[in-house]
Image (cartoon, rainbow over all chains, first blue to last red; front, side):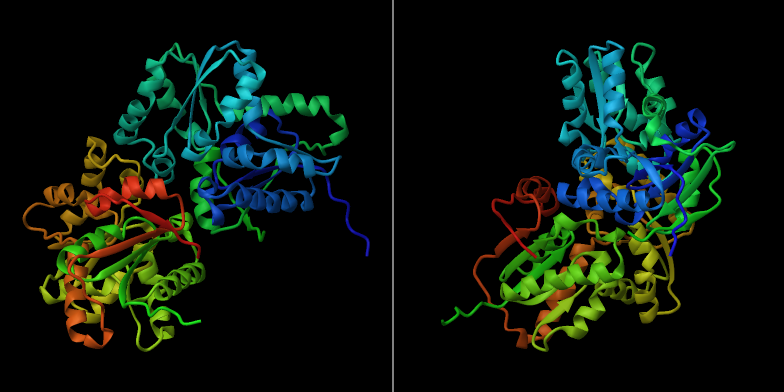
Length: 271
Length: 271
């Protein structure tokens, strides 16, 4: 039987909805491509799992996206980027590519000559020290101050983002980093851009807080320019298909907040 | 080879540390027994998992406790009590017993003739409607108002219990229940007793907030009196052994808060 040739697409994989905060920038900076988003909502959070399990789940997710015709995959999940990316890259077929979110942010702060960087993320991301390692690979002189801020994901996921309690908690979390005179703050969790306005307000003018989705998207733009062999299919209008391993309705409701755009259809993925 | 005869003990099983808030009352009301506590910390939270997985994990946990010589097991976890208990009870050997935490609390509110009950718990416990069903089985006229309060577990687990933000969040959570004129509030999560003082203060004198561990412990006392065939071994001093499926240090640190008592040794359990 002849198989229909699949077009070359870009895949975005996250343990949940957070990766939509990256996709949001991709479709604005690179609107000419076709995207497939996969959220492994049924098995989140990855942060609590062993590196072996995180690798296994990420492998299933990237295999799924390659089978759907992706030529290039962004692992938007910080935990999976820290724990599984390098192994997945080594095992990946030569003509396919898998990229993460940590490297672009590390390059950004190193290129911009910030010398004292704050990093906030989930307990597991901070414990992995992945940002510190990646930044110091590029420039060992940059001082990296990491802080776990584990309440932010539950606050965002339960729609408390705009309430005063969240602002108070943010202020307490950021105080120690401000005291350490950081000059840039990395949001090392794809959920946090939903709080970026408040985080920037609390950080003040002296601390630059880049939107991670924007940095990843600009870095991908450059990457695609340098890798024409990827041969990504181009279109007049952006095409997006959404997949989740869990309940579709919840994805629709909360996902639209992350994407700043209505999500109409979500398909069920079996990994 | 002759096996040493195991003494008849009481097992307490929870997905994590919360069950220690029940064990605390057991050792005070029933100090003459030997207890084995098992926290399946490596696989928590159970609330996000399918009923089949919750059953499977609970089965492994209860099998482990029976093998260690338990004659009677309390499933302190609300999720497992709601999703797995009845099946486990059906499959249990005749001379062994498995009890949950929902029934004793339902009996308590029904016996005390409260007619409007509030229930707070995790999303999964509230979604299961287990408290409402159990209470209305005993008395269909009791009105049950359920409310998911998903931020409380992360706040407690990240040591924010005593901070003003937690009190503010509690006030917002409890407002709708107070407006509905409930006369008793059930804490349907073994973590919540750590906030019981603040919850009682916010509820005021008109709303009775029983400590679930106390209710379970008094109910167990009655149960043991009515079931002498359990033949539980008695001692001069309480004996307790702790097991966890995850990191022992974290269990020690946070566990002492739940138990209001120092925990010296924790063993690793392989399920």
